[in-house]
Amino acid sequence: MPVPILNLKLQNQPLEGDLKAVFDRVLDSGRYILGPEVEQFEQNIAQAFDAEHAIGVSSGTDALIIALTALGIGPGDEVICPSFTFFATAGSIARIGAVPVFCDSQFIDFNLDIDDLTRRVTPKTKAIIPVHLFGQAARMDRLMDFARDKGIFVIEDAAQAIGAQYQGRQVGGFGDLGVFSFYPTKNLGGFGDAGMVVAQDESLSEKLRLLRNHGENPKYHHLMVGGNFRMDPLQAGLLNVKLPHYQEYLQKRRNNAAYYSKELSNIAGIEAGTQWEGERPREPVENPDPLKLAALRPDMPTSNDERVPTHCILLPTEKPGCLHTWNQYTLRVIGNGKRDSLKAFLTERGIGAEIYYPVPLHRQKCFEHFCVDYRESLPVADELASQVMSIPIFPELTVSSKDQVIESIQDWVKSNHE
Ligand SMILES: Cc1ncc(COP(=O)(O)O)c(C=O)c1O
Image (tube, rainbow, N blue to C red):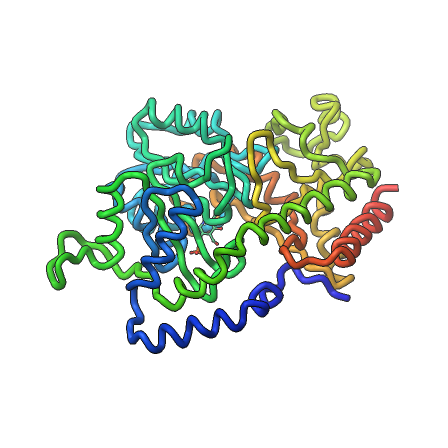
């Protein structure tokens, strides 16, 4: 049986009756933009994820755009974000005329490297957007201390991480603003596009409400130039049906991750990622000599090393103090071309595998003019982009599907590394 990377129908079909009732209700209400369904969803999100204020918007991308706008960020300002993330993080910075400044990531959790970030701050730096990538929090204590000390705003891109926790606190609530996405593949996935900004500060939340609707108050009087970033009641109502099931979905994802980690780490050649904390990449080397590289990092894999490494796959890990929501279970496949080989092997067997993300943002054509200085200086982002591969982790995955994934990976490891 094929194992897809994701099957949204399996989650949504059991709720069919309740979901259809939402459509009937919204149809009958005659109200198709904002309104009580959206307000109810905002209250529910604020309550479930410990936010003072929640403002429903049209997508996670739009949530980032109005968050930046509400903080007064615009042309000439610099905003630091990781290069190894989904495009929207930096795209939204560029869309408002600001400059995305890319920082490197760390291997342990794929999240931004705060040491590297601190080196990229200039007097023009107005904000930082940490991304809680794949569902695990970035290091928010250190980041917030640093940002507060420098007077720099923080917008958390929690698009992939609703419900994730850092030191017992919900993500989204550390920074000045937090952003969620309800894109269908997210842990709380809608039936189209939708997003949310969470805020702790009342005046910021009022500004966000104005901005999402052309800065209008009262009708036809515009206090600021906003846009159409409104959430629709149909989407809000449907998400209200799914929200009570969120913890159950999350627990299933966590169980799947635990199962993979236990079973996969029993396979020779596959290691848990924890031991790689603090791992730093080598400096970029032209025509690397595998023996020299091995001498530089005797205990670490070298992706340019053509000899058989002692391990070829590193597993993702939940860091101490974090509650990981496992939006993705992302492997690092070590060795030139090995990741693509494993992906092709799995595809052949009908197993879904995806690469999030094959091209780091500092290498994107559209950011070329921002990035001349960074090309050689984001080695972890570059290395991750060549190594990562995500495997199916969706809540409804059966034990036999998981076993199929594990067996196939084991077969690939055997055929490649013995
Ligand atoms: C890290 C990250 N930021 C922002 C977004 C944008 O969210 P949306 O697709 O809802 O616009 C996404 C969603 O794909 C994302 O993964």
